[in-house]
Image 1 (cartoon, helix red, strand yellow):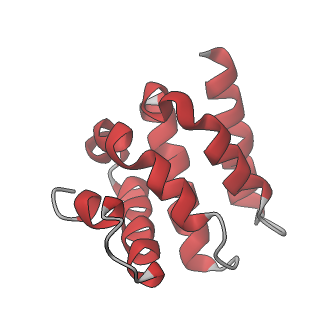
Image 2 (cartoon, rainbow, N blue to C red):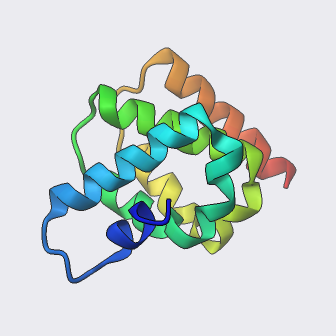
Image 3 (tube, one colour):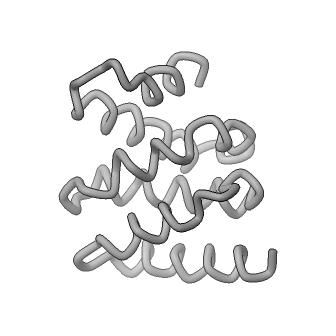
Length: 114
């Protein structure tokens, strides 16, 4: 996380693919070990959402979103004021798989319950 977060947040890097890959990696880490990654959310959540909102739907993106959903479940406060960016990234999915859609519903309940 000490290397991925600065990479994701570095606006001087003009390679969009590098930001996307860092965001996907963070999401996948959250899928495997959400409790360890979730405390870092306030430091990367905004750029994570922005980086993945516009990429095409695929398995990499899906696993990253499942990971961020697990992190939100562990640390809902980590979303901060950027919930709208997450919602924007979610609605840009053309057709999420059943498992991901179930995670989206679960996150909605976590956020609503506060």
